[in-house]
Amino acid sequence: MYVIFGKKTIAALLTAAVLMTTLIISGAGLHDHAVMTAADDANWGLSYRTEGSPPTGNASAQQLRQYRALYTGDTAQKQIYLTFDAGYENGYTPHILDVLKKHHIQATFFLVGNFIETAPELVKRMVSEGHLVGNHTYSHPDMSKIRDEKSFTDELTKLETLYQQTTGKPMPKFYRPPQGKYSEDNLAMAKKLGYTTVFWSLAYVDWYNDDQPTKEEAFSKLIPRIHNGAVVLLHSTSRTNSEILDELLTKWENMGYSFATVDKITLA
Image (cartoon, rainbow, N blue to C red):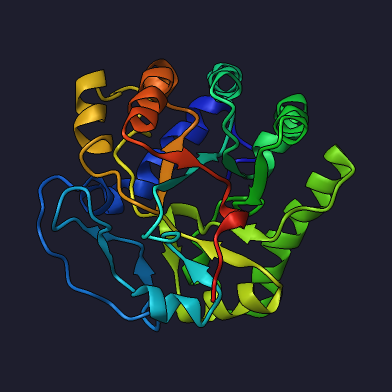
């Protein structure tokens, strides 16, 4: 678990944990995937059918909305909701924050306990520069395997306490399930705790530290598949993301997109 192991072990655990979702979220081709209901235990997955248009999730926006969950914003607006997942800090977040500041963009960072404990000054910087910090659980377990409400609640509230101790502010009520693993019970428990569950509508395989995508590979996924209301998932542990972010944001801006944090998404 993130809180007790070193960086190499953490990276190895993360790699193993997400292996089963690689083909789905990388979008290696425009194949259709079976659509699952929110009642199933599932890995969040996407089917990209038309470039430039929102993908289909394995639970519909309507199904998710009843649990105060989402994977896109308003698809009628040229708006991007940029999010970063961070299980640990390995040197790239300061530059990512510098680039976001240069572009006057606020993003959403979903953090786990290890990141807040080992990089508190970066967390404080995120808050001071107007970024939204969301709950990625304290120890990054497979939450779909957690059936009892107390254990589920403990993962979120332990991180809330750590965040408040670090920043002096209450944690915003936005939650991203580790690895995108969820169940209908999870969604209901998160809603009961006052959380909005945030999945994503655009991601690519950026988390293998020893096998980072090239700039061209990254752009081949992130440029043609961007769409109105996109909730974009990037990992701040990615060297490639750090290197391409300035150019990537410029490209998206030149395509007419603006940016907002996920708390600006309206769930009607």
